[in-house]
Structure formats: C-alpha cells, structure tokens
Image (cartoon, rainbow, N blue to C red; front, side, top):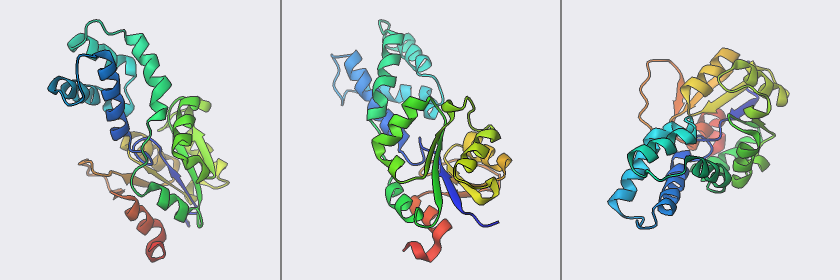
Amino acid sequence: MMIRGILFDFDGTLSNRKLAANHMYRQCILKMRSDLSADDLETETMVQFCMIADQYGIIPKRYVWQRLKDKYIPELDVEEWNDYWYQNFNKIQIPNNGAEEALKILKKHYKLGILTNGDYETQLAKVKMTGFDQLVDEVIVCGQYGISKPDERIFRIAAEKLGLSCEETAMVGDMFFTDICGAIKAGMKPVWYIGDENFISDYDVTAVRSFREILELFHGEECQ
C-alpha cells in the first residue's frame, strides 16, 4: 500500500536531544557547584556521568540526580533539581540538522505528524519551542492518552489522527524498542533514524543517518 503519511518521533529524531541534555546537565551542575567553571575537568566528568545515567532520556531525572548526589554532590536536593529540570528543559531544544527543511518539503506531499512519549504539557512545550508544531498536521503526545510507545494502540491512534490506516503510514524514530518495534507491530513502515550513533542490529529494517536520506527515501529525486 502506498505511504500517504509520516509520523516522526520528537526527542532524538526531530530534536537533537543528546546535545540539549548535555547543555542542560552542564547548566544544572554549574548552578549546583558555583565553585566550578564550564571548562573544569570535574564539571565535564559530572556532565558525562549524568549523560550515561540519563540513558537517552528514558530514565526518570530523580534517578540521575540521586546518582549524582551519591557519587559527587552529597548536599544535592534531588526533588528541587528534578523540578528545575522539568520547568526548564523545554526551553533548551535544538532541532536536528535538516529536520525543518525536510518537514517543509514532505508536508507538500504527505500528511505529517509527531508522535512522542511523555507528559502532555512538557512535550508539547518542547515541540512548540522548535516551531515544528506549525509544520505538521498533528502532534500526538502519548501522555494525553495514558498509552506509551511501543504500545501499538498509540500508533493506531496517531494514524487515525492523520485520517490514514497504519498501512498507509510510516514511522521515523531513533529508539528501536519504542519507535521501530511499535511501528512494526502496528503495521506501519518503520524507518530507524540512527544519526551518528553506532547501533548494531541484525534485524532487517530501513535505517537512515540524516534527514537528507529521509528525503531521498520518501521523495527521491524530487527532493533535490
């Protein structure tokens, strides 16, 4: 069946979440430890420690801050910094290279949507910060429905929001166990956006490293 719509994950796909999280952790640590500067070895060590604990954002921030408290900053108030993160991270959003241009081109030919896990208000604020909400037909935040990817029901809901069947819809995302697994189970065309990551998989799935490749995949020579 012909693909008529494309869903995009937000964090790590349309947005460069890794870079945004790095900036946010650095900002927090420099506020926690006013005796440090941005280029100190100790600062960088704690930032990288947090990035590993963060696990691409799937780990609750309380866990990350508790690990930081146990390892480096005994006086850290976990709840205070958990609140600080969720009040401020939506302000630090960095679009992935080529994402905006690709959406503008694809919008002329496909129904477009964003399908993202997370709290409704938090995720919607992040999407709006990039302006991507203006470039798609629907923004579907899983928290609004009480269902999260990879539950295939949320993929069906997203396709319905676009007025399409799952078979007419592609899902582009960076997380195999949420975006790709869920899309396959729902009957969508899966496209694994791996960017500059060195993921290793024996599973036969279309993988792309850039939005230029996404354009070529869905739009061929007409994207030039």
